[in-house]
Length: 494
Image (cartoon, rainbow, N blue to C red; front, side, top):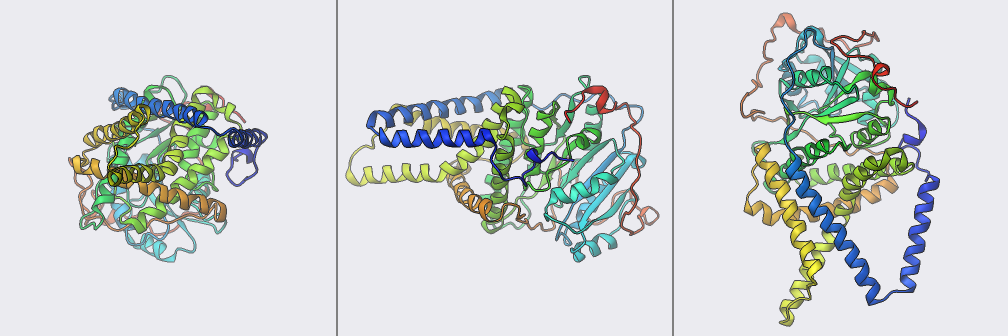
């Protein structure tokens, strides 16, 4: 059970947050009373130093980031694995997802899978029941309740999980068939006893016939910078990070010990990454990716990004109630990931508009724009390091990212400010509303080296089709495969 102070449903400020708010208000009032050119120059210089540090941080991550080492040999007994896929309004892609899950290379007798559906979603339920499914994959119908979020649906299914390990996939996912085996070997081979979660890299491949090539390419590069550069680099530094919403692999006993997912947080993945760290556990990354399609045009991209930023704000609010509980490294990571993401999203648009206006006015006046050396260095190094992360990450992920993409990058970054403004409003007006992203069937092969047959279930004959009945049982299974109970590794805080 999740403690109230770690749940986004509690919107009250803690004593620390009130103190910080009062201190900020006092500082703003004092600054307004003593406003001067010198004070503005000092504030600008301090901000410039911070931005230069961020540029150096990005370079450090590029240097440190590299794929994790190849896993150890396979265990004699594979741990039991559970796959959860929470779906809502996904009737048109559910059969495609089943085909991709059926292609996973893992002993079928060690697998358990649930398509977690909502009772009111009759179309997706009908499509899932009609589709041919491997015997280990069942339909689980979550009982009605609030909030209507993906993490609540996952929490409803969690008591029925019998696996030692668990992973979550989304409707549009095409996981590498060997991903579960890699994760299982890493968990079994963990000598520290502290490894609680492994995040697979998410890679974007635009759907055929996409009409939003600009957003698709920028989105793919953004994902590449995050999953190929930032996360591996932070793992090398021993820091926590916000998990991706899919393809994260957990030890089930630890997941239950920390309270599962926060049903009220619309980016439950980001929250859980820091909560695991708060309870004394460690997270890592995998080599084998999961392929996804981008959200599509602006009308689909904007609600998704709005939800992400709103969830980041929720996660920021939860974990700054008691920031000391994260420890120095955890707090630094919270600042450099969620804090930086929120600040950047809010500042990109206004800053670029100001730069463009300054240049335009200077050109019309026939005068060179006033460009302090520090401001110019911040502008150039900030853009160059952002491009560097995208370029190196895109090369590793096999995503296109050329000069024209770099030139148009600031336009995409400015769109983040639009999403940020929308997220602030939605946080105040509808904090727990889940902005649904529509997913469409993908006709392209998901891997460059191993294509899936989308017209049939690989290795699945009529004799292997599961009976189309929703799951109702609630059984348990003891630990296997060399995994020790969490209490024998490191006791989580109550």
